[in-house]
View 1 (spheres, one colour):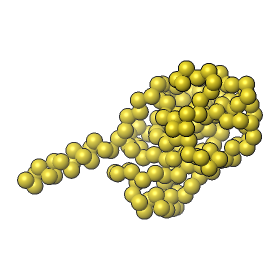
View 2 (cartoon, rainbow, N blue to C red):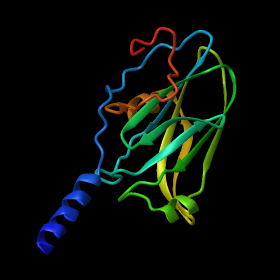
View 3 (cartoon, one colour):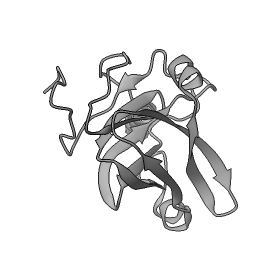
View 4 (cartoon, rainbow, N blue to C red):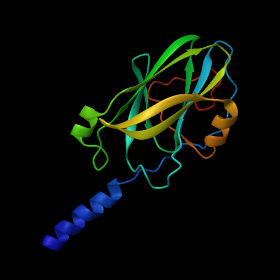
Length: 167
């Protein structure tokens, strides 16, 4: 009986230790004339490093997506100042309640213009108070290169451009 219980918990740990992103692979899209196009992406260069670790992403205090390693999110915004925030989410086998309570919120302020495209690279790191997802703007060439193979993340806010084929 003990072996069966141990086997059950071992298989649960192995199955819950990773996540597979199932969205379509990144393909650049044309910006919309009256909105800014912002790609947020997290491509981890260290294979097998993140498992189920994930971060909530907010834009102007509204949650827009949950960011996983290997994923990208397409965000359309009106021109003006955007304030992005990232914070570690609780997850079984990835981040405990204490980790989440101590993890620092990271912020990025970005002034965007209609018709322009921006690339926001996300990088997870250890900080004195815990895990954090840093965000910073990169140029188009670097963004396009690093996003190769990234998979589209879910869109809880249905923040799509009028001509988005996924709509």
